[in-house]
Image (cartoon, rainbow, N blue to C red; front, side):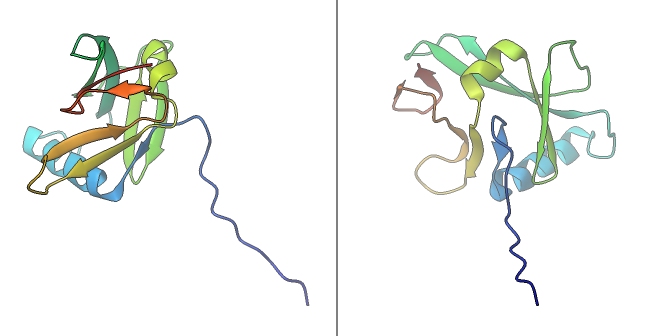
Length: 123
């Protein structure tokens, strides 16, 4: 009799979505009227600005660029441009609905410093 070991391995160098964030993304896609259109996805990115130098951005989109990076986690398709991916690699999109800071936030292992509001960072 052989012992079979099943290992749950997540891909490295990706963008991840927590279960709670995935639920909220689905809810927002429904409110936007795009939940049943498979061409739509969550676009995440990084732009200059904010008190720490770089800020996160999120939106729904349905156009893929030639260098866009695509991932899927917890049933959510996530797309980012290549430049933003360099800052977001192995980041987890999370959602909190608690009294202290309701909303989305990024758990970014690449950020060397974040601001108090959690919306900007530096590397």
